[in-house]
Image (cartoon, rainbow, N blue to C red):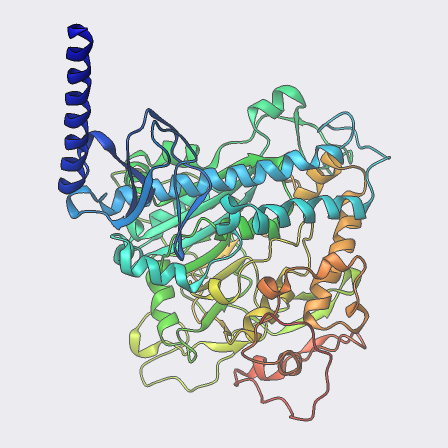
Length: 601
């Protein structure tokens, strides 16, 4: 009996001490033993308090905290109920430095995009040929409607119904505001330029990156986002890699795996590569050519690698650069009449097939060393007046193809002491001239255009129509297009024997896939820009999500059709006289009645 009483007293004392300990902990705050910090963004942490056994996953679905949503843990095993979650500013001593923030954010975004592409690819398993991705075309492929609906349904679900991927829908102004207030690396980013490079099985891609950085005045202020679509070693082992159709026998031939753009660049410029990676400036999204959905979708993916840099440039993976190209662009852009809501764009001058320096006496296809820069001479086009996009005509599928490359339109008289070749002198710099159209091979602007005119992810398979769509959306959102007054890069235009994405579509979806699917998807663009025959679309899903990816609401569509001299009803080619003479665009007649398309609100 005495033993039982003694045990009871001991249990009571233990309970009393336990309660006293809990009271003491609540009064003094959580201790290191029962607090974990979970990184959810580079500048915020989620603090989880409470007794717990383990944390299995640190990245999962959002956790709602009042009106704010943060990423938090999805699986916990707790002894006593749910943990208490609290969002708070990271103490200064615990913050990551700016370079680490950039590197972590770049890695997380690349992995998210990788998973996004993989989800789409998995959904396409049902519409691919029974034999998988290979050389043999399937004559019994899925219908265009089935292929479109498969793409539309999976991308809509991921962007609009899956919280993990919702941030990929479009950039918002609130992201910029939040970053400015909370992100330690924000001011560093805002002095930088982001360059989007879309590469489809392009062996010139490493040379493009090498020359881009070699020729830059401030290489460590340039971030690059490469969207690489290659035939990798795994595909080569399973299905083989193949050339384009070769002219000598009109057949494709076996080929080795494609070179990795960033890996090859880093072998050429190892020390620079380490610096770029340490700062989070070297970003790449890799996926197989069987997962390609065309250049417009590639541009969208590239834009999602942007991390609040001030300037945004878009080039192709076979581009040669002028010396100090980045400084020249910023100088000329600052004097554009509509700065900062100005967009520079044109079809660049023709450049070499293999980007690189032009050396004395010959075109050298080699590259500069890491430590010693050889004397080189300039290409004739470097800093010279470039072409201007002043014409457009109707091509296949009645879609507008922009592009006669007009001579740069000189308007003003030269200042004393200047001639047409002395544009590098500040007093001789030309005011950029207005243009009606962009050329997708080169675009440069303040990156805030991404908030007004996000790239449309619902234009798979299309090669044509990109420039008409982008030009119209930019102008209606209040952005003016300009011909750059100095040429800062050149483009390799003649690439007839290089693999193209439509060849991959042939093998991954079936015979005749590209032209047929492009024709099916193009009415989405026609509907946006006001083709009378595209006011009603079949299927109606071609007009989905135009609140996000349709026209702007700063200026009416009819005014743009007037200044760009576009007549969709009669399919008349455009010759924009004010562009050729270097004048400002005219004001549209107020009574002009032109078709309108649904605009983004």
